[in-house]
Image (cartoon, rainbow, N blue to C red; front, top):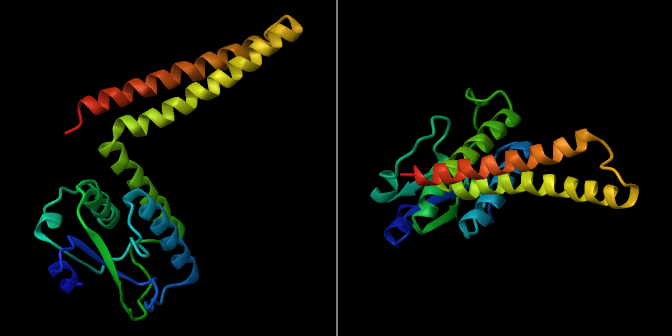
Length: 190
């Protein structure tokens, strides 16, 4: 891993799951790690097989990236390095069987906490995109309900009930508020 850093990579991961690797984790853990790897590969535009590995080598610049996460640094470090356009790579490694984790009760506990942290990181990195997508989904849902109400008015002569109208407006108003939160968070971003 250090050799790859010397070759110009900023962050090198020791992959327990790629071709030539010999990981000893359970099937459930491997499946969860591969799901994370697919998401991160897409987000970072880099082919990665093991994004949750603690086997890493990195440059001083990567070590100095600010981290806000108190749960685990692995995903946040990858996202921050990717956002800074740092060169990320990995090499296959062989690992020995490990003891059961003392940090997590089960793989679902880890996955839930990890996904929450990923969402927090993206909320802080790209608040306008994060809140914008959520807000637009609410506006879209309100708009679809509004189209149904309009159809109902044209065909039957009534809105089909006040609760539907209230729900449509509520979704649109919530969506607009979430979009405004995104703009405010984007203005306050460091």
